[in-house]
Image 1: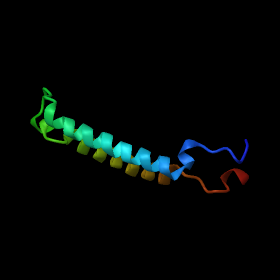
Image 2: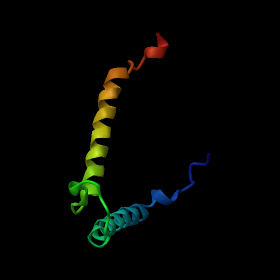
Image 3: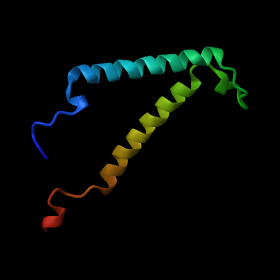
Length: 82
C-alpha cells in the first residue's frame, strides 16, 4: 500500500465537518421530539429526550461491560510465545 495515499478523514477540516454534522443531526433529532407524537405504553417513555438519555446510558453501560470483560479474558502479552 502506498504511503502517500491520503484518505478523506486525514484532513482535519473534514473531521471537524463530520463532528459538527453529527452534532447538528443529534440536535435536530432531539428537537423533533417536540413535534413528533408517539403512542407510548409507559408514561416515562413520553418524556422529552428520553430515548437520547436512555441510549447514552446504554452505550456507557456497554463500554463498562466491555472493560470488565476484557479484564476477565485478557491474556498476557507473550501468551503465544510460551
